Image 1: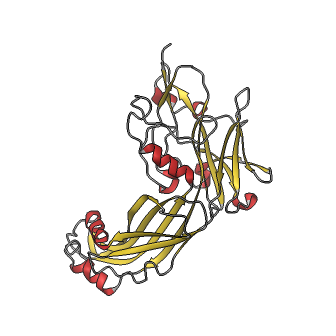
Image 2: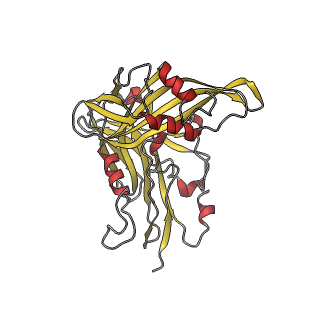
Length: 342
């Protein structure tokens, strides 16, 4: 029998977990030998802080002798019909909630340009106040595709909120000594095992065509995309070298032909993921050849059928941190950034 390649949904690199959580490069291409197989592709991250929850439910398709680029633009190949039922169930109570089929573009979430059709961008939605999730609740996803196809299920435990510690690091941020380190700390009572840490810096810089006008600009420094906690303590700590702060800015900006730059302030964001993310990362980092001599890396999925991930995440954002006078002087005159016009 001739093998036919399945082209699965890849709008985000799980693959770059929705809003940048844990950028992991791994292939989701695979092959089957039975034509006509229905393979659901599901992507859903549940965050108690969201005002609405969205789940993407699509299906892989067989290219066969067709042009994959043409098939990828076929809405009927990409999405299930409206008759598909997508529900969430609170496992402890058994209460179920129907999700509404919506166009993500109309909700403010257009689909990224790529090989797949961008309009419509079908998602399944439920308002957070309708679901009213609490930390440590177990929730189950249920997808009924109709016919004799088996029920698709997945479960996850809802993560409680993260709280960044106000004085770690202290504000203003002292970054004078290149050889020192600074600590970022947060508290969490949930089962979050892996974290994405980012520093978002806000600056103003002269416009190339008019040095007297300053435009706002943002730099995003990924301190770690997959930081694992060392123990089960309530406080998690992460340290970074001060020197790396200035190296990042040096690598992100070019010297100005004229004019100047101002450093305004910065934000710190930490996002945590549960055991599903930790397992996904472990599998994506597996050595080639791990599967009994195969040269393919195992594909992670916590669905009963198909491919994808249904999991919980949680985050916190600390805003408006400024730099100390010593740190600003290092930005203006230090060895790494003195030519950048601060």
